[in-house]
Image (cartoon, rainbow, N blue to C red; front, side, top):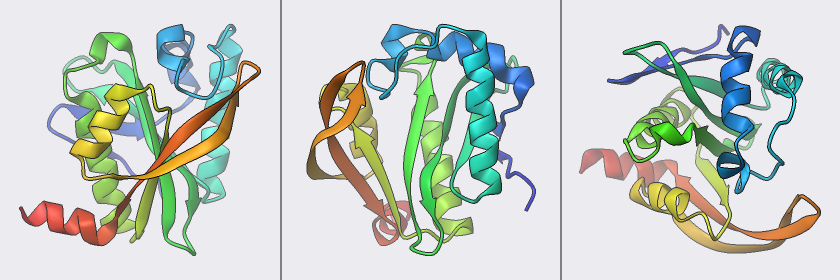
Length: 184
């Protein structure tokens, strides 16, 4: 299937290519972005190209879909959003996202994640979307709870980042819960 392009009022969710590598590098080289990301900040632009290659391979292998988040007003890539650990047979995936700090607290993440949830439940017919979140990441926890995710509990020592094991919360949203929220 061709890569799905999604649109919201202010955003276009597009396939990332190497032409977007500088924007991806600019975002993922920031400590403030990667502190809860499970990885160290990028130090070389080539790391962004490798990540885009991984996104492409995961899409081809039906193991994930990652969109670039592009502002319609100026065509600028401000982050990415997508499905990780996609398992079509069991109808589940985990959602992940990041934005450039200049775009925080403007509703872009809610807009992008909402559109990916709609695509996931309606087009891919997934039943469950999970999210792995550091307990200290209050902004992400708030966003997911606003969208109806339930906190299922703590995953102890789940992510190794910079030589330190971190606990994370596991949150989830089921299709029936999402459908009910769309009726309200």
